[in-house]
Image (tube, rainbow over all chains, first blue to last red; front, side, top):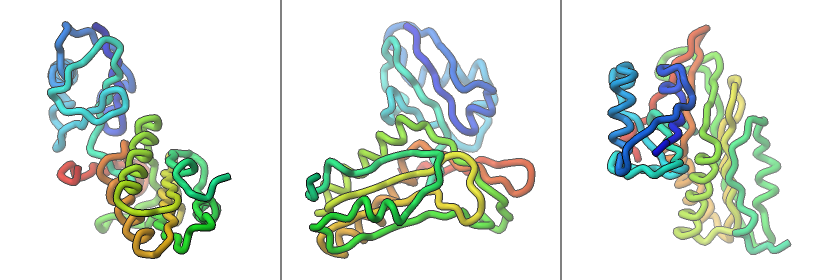
Length: 81
Length: 148
């Protein structure tokens, strides 16, 4: 299955991408997606904070199971206001 | 138009300058006895470092969904007539408003409490990030994940 990954703020700049397409086996989780990205982009794991994740515009945990066509967003802790 | 509120709440992200007075007028209904406001503005320093300007980045469709969810949370907890929550994105200079929350209610206590709740929740869950520019290089402000 194919998942669209959206990157924001510091992660967008660190990876030099704002959008990626990743292919996973059925049953892959958000945590699996983060592990794959950290292998490809080691800089992702070298920050002093952990990414937050959202699937289809809703906050999700690392255990969330991905589905074909999902939009997975990866971003740093929010700092609006 | 109904003055009962609910259908005319505002939850929005915009790159246009914010107009707190216009939003205050938008949330007023004939049943409103109080309008509470919170306006976040860009200041000239952060933790001792000078700030020249800020850039806010958002994930707009999710940010607007989260803002709308916070409005629903407010409606579950307080009897309010109308709520507006608007966050600005893009480059902001010192003194410009980054976020405006307006809450109208029959009485002051609901309006004040709901307004304070609204800004705290924005800082916890709405996907918006701030980059501070002191001189030429900017630095992302990382939120406190324990607040989620």
